Image 1 (cartoon, rainbow, N blue to C red):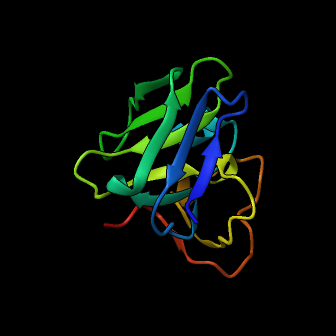
Image 2: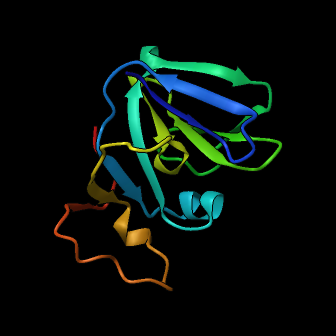
Image 3: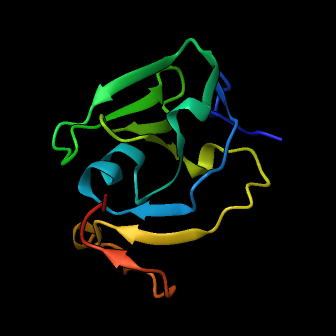
Length: 134
């Protein structure tokens, strides 16, 4: 059965017809500004993502992205939904936008050197990386 998800208001809905990567927690400044805190994201092959309703989906170039990424969000409710870097075979999907149960687990943390000064990095035993690899 495919995974599914949506924005807060339901105007953007999607399905993923393939495997999802475990969740990475991104602590970069851009993700924190965009989502309000560290951003939890899974990823899927581009060809596995199917937009069911994208009438309010808008894309914003990420101004300081190391990877020239763009970010997809719902213009109606503001939900942060996707992170898309050109040249990557996958697209990142906000873990919080998925319908449950997801069956996913956190697999690591990235951009830990940019973590906000208002929270400690979790001591959860997951790998912590200075950058996004690959």
